[in-house]
Length: 94
Image 1 (spheres, rainbow, N blue to C red):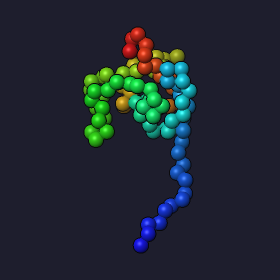
Image 2: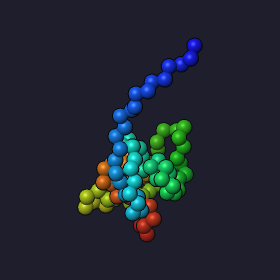
Image 3: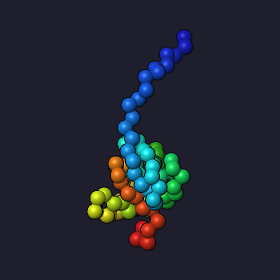
Image 4: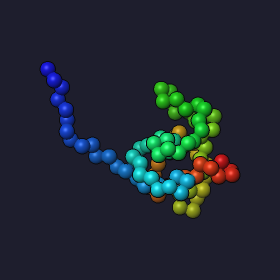
């Protein structure tokens, strides 16, 4: 018997963010790393493995983010995208 396909669209919330000056739309629950990779932006990783739980131990995937007036460093594998987030992957500090 053929399987039944559900044609209802999923209600996916999108957010707008900037990575290295590029405006990008991403799914709300995506990580910075996933979003960057989907957009063709390289962020190096060492401990990242989809089959393992998120660890972020090696810190190789660090990026600089700006939220409002606050700037800080986060592991891109663990940090979820947010509306208006500004991400830099190639600063001198990174």
